[in-house]
Amino acid sequence: MRLAHYAAIAAGTLLLTGCGDRQGSIEAATTLAEAVFPEQLDVFDTQMMKGQYAVIFTRKGDPFSRIRLYVDHDPAKCRVGAHCEQQLRTAYVNGTAAGAKLKAMAQTLPSCGIAILGVDASKLDPSFRTDIELDMDRADQQPALDRLGTCIAAFRAALPDNATPEQRGLSLGILLPRPGKAAPPDPEPSFEKSIDRSRADEPQYLTFVGPEETQLTPGALRLHPRHLLRPEMRDRLAALARDVLSAQRQPGHIQHHVEFHGTKLDPQRLDVLRTYVLACSVHEPGKGPCRTDLAVRMRYDMTTGEVSETAILRDIRDDEGALRLQPLPGR
Image (cartoon, rainbow, N blue to C red; front, side, top):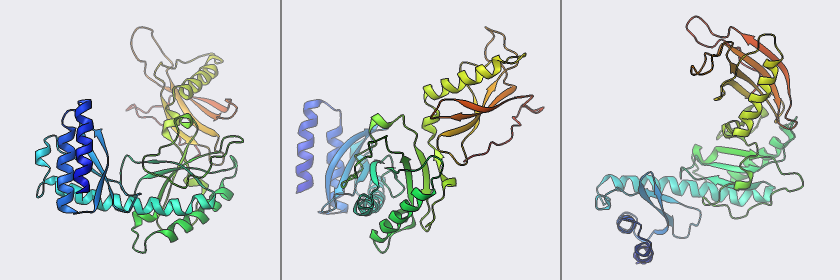
């Protein structure tokens, strides 16, 4: 039996490396898989996730599918009739559907000129996010989104006839090409390929394309929150806000742990942010965090690193302490 063969190989390797009860998890998972889906699944990989082992299968003849089964801390409990069986059945449906979706993307997006940079496989179901490269103009994204819309139509045509809404919809993370270094299309994307770490600091724009959506619009783009959490970005915005405050007759204090509020991507431009940086009008060193009661409003250009349209707003809280700042224009 091929599953037993994989389990034996993995077991021998793991005994050499001393990885706890990983062997028992593989054996329990392969035994269950053979009972529920006889001669259908091969072991692909094993992972330690959230304190327990996950055994990942692929369907025979379907290299895109990934079926992840979390094995109980006591592998003996993972058997037919137990919760583990229902978990495997659910993972089989999700992993097969996700594989069919990724296969349709692999068949259409590269030939359409869209480079797939990686896949977020934290969830092996059809809702996974795909990271792509798209040459969008920083001031006018509509032409590029129109091109992408044509590619998405081709992708949907390649899906199975009974594709679900989750398969027809797309969660995308979009990066702009590097100057003079457009990424080559990857004809063989997989759930094991994630975006290259060297591009982790580049702005990434998130969007979701609904299952029946045909017209993509710039207003649906959002800057990935990860970019806003980068220490370099936070420190730069805080320093610029301090410069604005220091020029006032009544300068304020921005705390070490900077508070931002209402940050948005500019309505038109991809390289401009609008945000509030909160500050205190009174600060007593050595007495802990101060109460933020003023805000520096700014427009930040991520390309030049400069700010404009700055303003200082005081008395920004109501009698109950809630912020009363107007929403910033943006997306």
